[in-house]
Image (cartoon, rainbow, N blue to C red):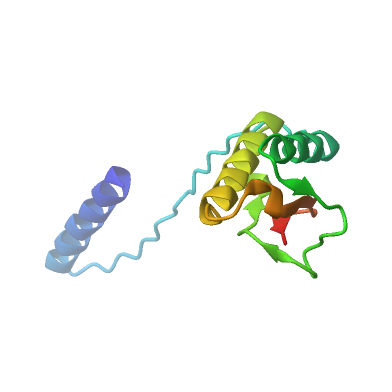
Length: 130
């Protein structure tokens, strides 16, 4: 930005001095774009491990695991976007928080009254319940 401002001031000065001397000058400004990229390590999300851990966590909380519950035949919490999580640990932690939120939302019911399942699509992790 400073370089651009200096160039513009120089051009204004040149053009004003040229106008005084009645000489026409044409100039062009070339700009360069600097792009910085940060390489993130490849994400290795183990979908089987995450489903297993979240299903066992829900069972420990007293909920019933029902593998027949799917996204199209049950209710579900807002899905977690998998690409925002760097590793399995972070995604498992977010899934556990979602299960806690589900239990808090239905606090007037016993956990054994709630059936749930963990569904992972290519982009999202769903906690479905019924």
